[in-house]
Amino acid sequence: MRAKDGIRFAGIVRTFVNRPELPVIATAFQSQFKAIGFDLSISIGEFQAIAEGQRDGTLDLGLSSRNTTVVPDPVSTITLDFTSDVPTSGATGATNWRNDDLRRSVASYFGATEESMRPPIRRRIVEILQQELPVIAVVWYDQIVAVGNRIEGFDVDPFEHCLRLERLTVKS
Image (cartoon, rainbow, N blue to C red; front, side):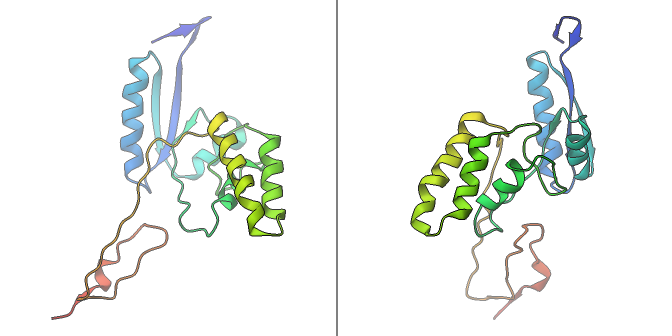
């Protein structure tokens, strides 16, 4: 493991089991970090441990998930994650990252009186996040659902936690 000025390159990534893919991804991170001389430990607990670590300053890395498909406008998620000085229980944004241009852009976006004013502001918000990378999306997916005419009782869980297969029936 590498060290600089007597300090070993090491840290802990906190994640949780509600999304079963997260511990697997954390394990892949651990292997990749080891290859560059960084000793990464994994702590699997409750989601709240990430937010608590943000608040008390003990968070090295947090591996979380964010679903923006259940909101009509993802800028509201950006507002929660990146424009608050105090992490909330639902925030998974950057720790100690602040960008006043982003904050002004978000305020302008929500203050826009006409929809036609929003696209250039939205582009600026995305530009700031892409340039500064306060968080890094490492994986993503699209939930794709196809249902035949013979299937009854199907509906999509907006939180993508359950397939609700017990509700399905097949017409003969």
